[in-house]
Length: 369
Ligand code: UD1
Image (cartoon, rainbow, N blue to C red; front, side, top):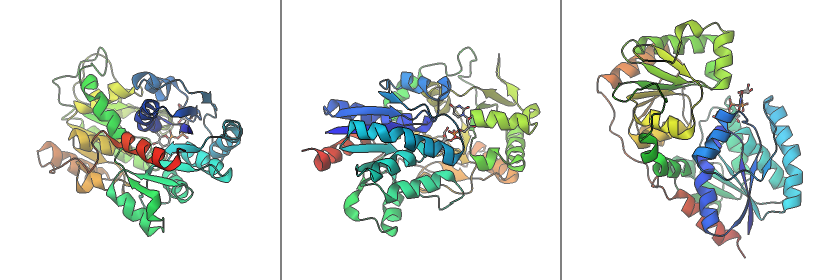
């Protein structure tokens, strides 16, 4: 059996790493294709090093672009790869443009598609990722689901039950494998934050960072919270550009030496450093998808700077609350958490470190021989 595994953007790497490992253990012939959607050292190569992912066999080097431009470039460049390699299956993860582009291309060549993290829905079609999720699922042959809401969503969309497999969460496989190591390092190098109570911020959704009003509201709210607790903010490249363009840098500091109160910007961190930073935090503010899940497993309160989530189990079961870009709501949620009014939380079903094993065993059952 020959499988092409696709990665493209930062959140793909930690979802793919345990699958690549399990496939290797099972003796599957696999080809790793990197679309090059993310290309900066800190957004890509650093993750290959931290996660011991093998060097991609093929890098399509598509780089940045508009949504249609990026998606179209990936499709054009990956098609000849699929034709030459003639895999039995391609496997995509998550909801980024690379996921959709490769799924469409394979499906039109009659190559079966497996989608890991299927069925998640924010029901917000203004998010590019929601379009990618719905369309990728519609043309996938194997739908690997990470939380039970995904099963209901896929059934409601008319997906046949025999395509749906509830396997758990491969990103959590990676977290559980690396947690100890991450907790033992100094995540910010020479800046020591162990034994300090601090928060962590990540922000990159177009709706938050490309709208001046929303970005200003969020930073103002964080500035107020940061009077009582320093906030460490590893900044996504898109967000840095917008902070400067909107003239908001004045409310932020560069990190060097000691941290006291305030919001401290750093460059994007590698996987281990970011996990270590998050594991030691008192509070996390984010608009990322995956971080909502990681904080749930780490038991750290998470305030999500969005009005919706495609990962409802992190709210019903985990540590997550939604605050949107509403300044007062962000401050109120933070106060509540800092005053100890946390939520009871637990670990969602099958987030046990064995999701990749289950995926590979289904693939062998369905596609080998
Ligand atoms: C993408 C994913 C998003 C994911 C995020 C994680 C889509 C639609 N979105 O969003 O789901 O949560 O990755 O980071 O696929 N840039 C760099 N260096 C890089 C990569 C990007 O400077 O290595 C800049 C680009 O110039 C561009 C911006 O960041 O201006 C956006 O990059 P893009 O890949 O389009 O989307 P993300 O916002 O990163």
